[in-house]
Length: 63
Image 1 (cartoon, one colour):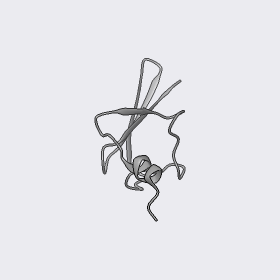
Image 2 (tube, rainbow, N blue to C red):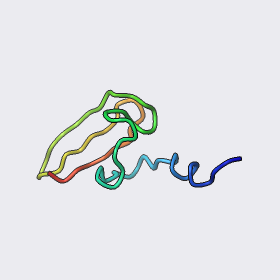
Image 3 (cartoon, rainbow, N blue to C red):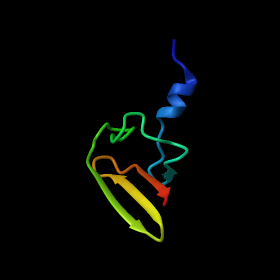
Image 4 (tube, rainbow, N blue to C red):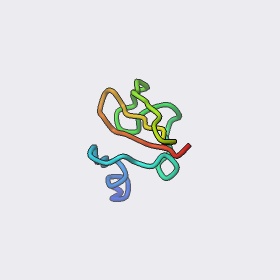
């Protein structure tokens, strides 16, 4: 049986930056979309931005 909430949970909008506090990693240090551990990260204006280099999904965190 297919769980509709699981399907909705797997859909990631690549045009959106997700808040890390609301959407933490399912597996620490891994992208939830592609399971890669290769990220491009930066800090600007007290905001930490992390973007997966494999699929492009992004998360941010207020410092």
